[in-house]
Length: 154
Image (tube, rainbow, N blue to C red; front, side, top):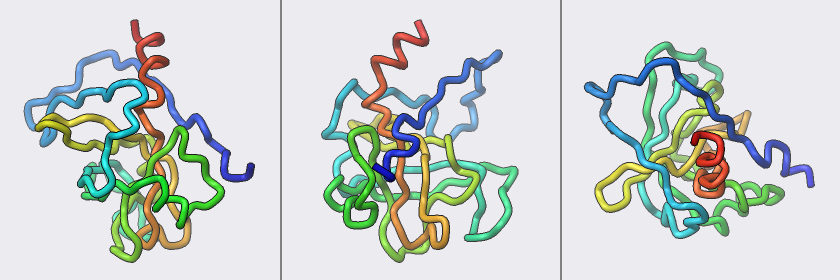
């Protein structure tokens, strides 16, 4: 269907050097378990980060920004994105909160806490182009790809 563009919106990059974590707010981020569909739970507060615009139509920023977004159930997501399959995706954000992911944030992490540890739940995939702050953003569901990640990083 038309909502299945970028169904597998994920890539792996190998860095030449380790990323220093000394001043990182989140610190080390863990990978969720393969197929963990109970995480994140609807209503969990998560953190999205990226170098996208700070306001709709604004330019990208050279300092990473962060925004707290609420994870939503697939059922709730379908209200906003009815043609999108949520097998490999999840969504976070709320209607009309005027905050969310913006142009330039794609590829950035969506991190949610579980038992006091940060896990990467999602990868920013897309948002509403006209009013990104009025619709929840859509993220690649990392737990659908753990086996693939491990096969390609061993």
